[in-house]
Image 1 (cartoon, rainbow, N blue to C red):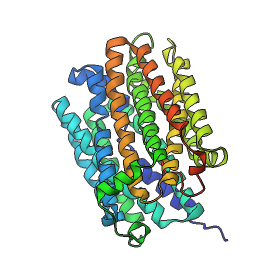
Image 2: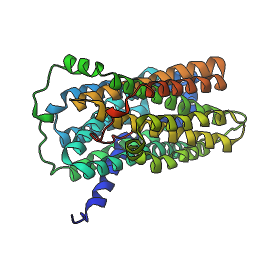
Image 3: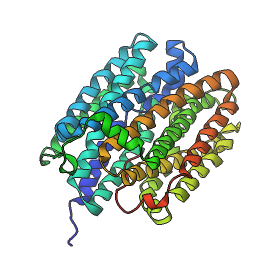
Length: 400
């Protein structure tokens, strides 16, 4: 087969769409100490508010998955990204923590809608290796948003203030909407998945909860984002306070720890296919656990090394889990993915809330122990998976 000379350009566009869709999700974590001081609230309260977008992500991911057969792909994606600019702009003027939290939830709703519909578009418009390549590009864009979003937030907030920072992100939202409008406008109309009329929502959900491997995957997703957000939300305060005392700009540069994940995460599908899901989970979660003791160091270098290990391990585990869901679901994969995303993001919210309280009441070492417990729980769930379930059917889905 003759190579498509336009394929690299298309993958670049897909990666950029993935980046612009989720660039708001974790960017505010980079300015958490500044926001906590601005609103005069405890670290745990600000951590929950910043991560409240996960509530919207969880709810909208499930709803959109259940009604996705009725939603236009291109139109739904660009409208969601355009509407995302509204709460992003209003965050610049949020008068109190409650308003800030509500606007972050609204951001999550629109980001999740765009993300879920883009996933459906990529799966329906590609087949075989083209699907894998498209999803790998989307994965890279997702991971890049974790790094670049934080860098943009810390740099702009340091140079021009918090309000201007949110204006910049609103412009990025509109840029994403415009990119989708111009690049996906010729996509053919989508049909109902599997050519079947959809069953009632409760019946579709109940069917997936009868699959033990899927339930274990939902739990793994919950535990992984619990640990990831618990660690990466509150390490900002550790880095900003004594003895490390990093400046806001230096705090942003720390997030280059996500750079290795941009290289390793797209490999998760092939690794899991070759060695099986359980060994892949054990290796990735083990790497993350091994990095946790380094987060307790009183110098910057080992903390950065530990964050790199936690980032690579959790992203790899998350990519493996999302790919496994696609394989383990016997039917109605859109609904299965929606349930998984809901569990995943609820785990992130729980991690922000629980780890914040532990950090405020018992200190950073205790918080790191709880993070480790969540990763161990994920490994325990992974041990229950049957390797035969993860056959060749299904492709790797993006990790966020």
